[in-house]
Amino acid sequence: MMVNKWFNKVFAAAIALLFSCPLAGYAESQRGIHTKESIFPGRQLWEFGARLSFVETNDNLEQFRNSSTDTVLLTPYLRYGINDDMSVDVDLPFGSADSDALGDDSGLGNISVGLQLRAYQNALEYPYVIPHIKLNLETADENSALDDGAGGVEFGVSVGTVVNDMYRWVGDVSYEIRGDEENLIRGSVTLITEISEKFSLILEATITDEGDSTGSDNPIVGIGGMAYQWSENIHTSWYGGGGLNTDDDVIAMFKAGYSF
Image (cartoon, rainbow, N blue to C red; front, side):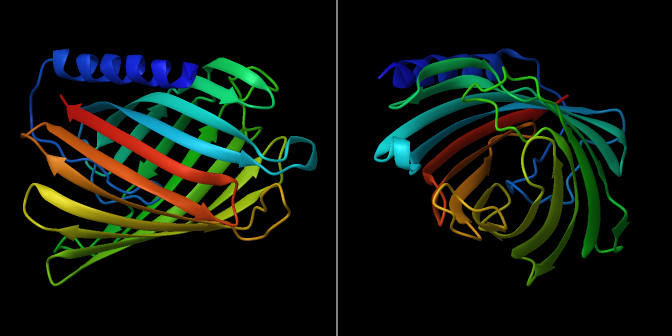
């Protein structure tokens, strides 16, 4: 399929770009998908990276029954530390979708610009509270497969703690005010198990009040993954999972980043 060839090309490009850049400083990266860890670039420091994701969606609408859509997104991201407790985050997605019903589509997705603030953190680094807000810009072509129609504002708060110096729990509640779609409430919880200083395991579950194409309520998405700190500045994560009461049957993601 065309999307598989495209996936291989963007994967190679992302890895080449990542390892061709100069390296400096120590960095960790937030490991949850929808939750925010108490990890920031630092005052006037940068984190740059990319997420490569694949989603297989079954289209259950009556006119498209038994058809599917494969979507591949390469999302370069940038985080800048305004100070030790605040960052500005920018996502620039572009990708390709291959639909049995609607054909192929590719191009720019919806750009987002966000702000995260560590409003509270105990002297022992936990618990912590991180309010966040994100502006979703409708930069994708209208009615394209990459336009989710969800342009608007998303705001929420993450709360995290550590148990037995090994288990990191983070919960998040977010609310999206969306332009062309109904507003959305999302709840997420992430468990991160620190196997070593460099290696960790990740489990995350997310539930929303948005129904799928069959009208089912409360879609639930579960993912599992791992993160590895290769050096003082290179970090990678792998994720895979699927959903219940949702059209998204298969979800896979690779993330890599560094700081400077």
